[in-house]
Length: 450
Image 1: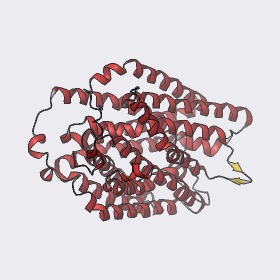
Image 2: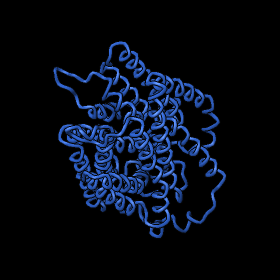
Image 3: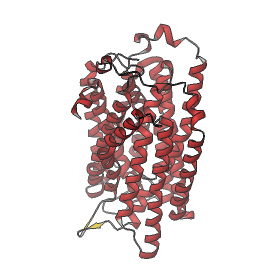
Image 4: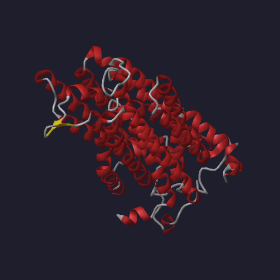
């Protein structure tokens, strides 16, 4: 196991810890955002006092904007600054954004969210592109490298839900927001320290080796086909995250009001349930990656599109658990916590099949000159999924949670089956981009940038 980790470039772990702290700040803020918005102003830990539907609407618009801004963030990196400088810019904006949220004022709430939107848009697509840039084309370690990177994301998310969420709910929302800012300061510090391990990736276009041979060349037929597949894969992303992101919105509010959170006479903070997903990722991340690697080596279907289809269906099955919770709360007044645990477990297994490999998929198929732009488009698709999640959450106030949860399960099951039906045609458009190079001694050396 240790050998598998030591085979990767040192730069991977700089990006790992940078993203870990960035996700600590983002998911910490996210864990308490809707709770802060719906908490009464008359409460000892006063919030904004907004109703559930309006809070979910703001949550949807905000999370959409966070990821849609990845498109201009990618363009800025591809054309002018390079990924490395754009990531640093994003980190600095996030430090200010999270810190301003610590101020108890509506203007600070608006200004802080705006800066976070700009910061995540600059950092998120470009740091993921830099991970891909650490590996040569065809390097079989790439998918595993993205899984390691993904585990780093979720260590940050796990700690955030417990630490930031706990501080926010128990001691004060604005203390929680401020703590998220401290996490981002640590992330920027790690990134600055690790520049020496990232000297060959993320440079401005004029400094990259691909400038003269790639930037001005028109796309080939193969590259165009691969771009088509990427854009089609973004539809899968929208469906996946439109369902999955109920966690921070509707499921969070549902947990707060309709789930029995008492354990041995102590009430578990609502935000702590947000830690289940990253906790399960840390446990099952390497296991799921190993399962797919063994399946691939056995010459069984293990393409990224196949994983995304299967992952979407598994994640959707988690909403059957939420349907069970809704039925129980309707009859008994409250639902048991075990429904939530089962739902988050299935969501996590589905996510591990679909999400980390999707990041790797983009770096395999996207032309070099559009690398960050396509990564930005991926996160923009994630943002649209977040907005759909918000709209679905809002509709629960009229349609009912049972109908929403059950509807998501049915839709994702049908959608996943359709993907499997058209899998062969979609794979043909990739023109073998996922074919691995033969094992050789060079794959164990630190690779050059793509």
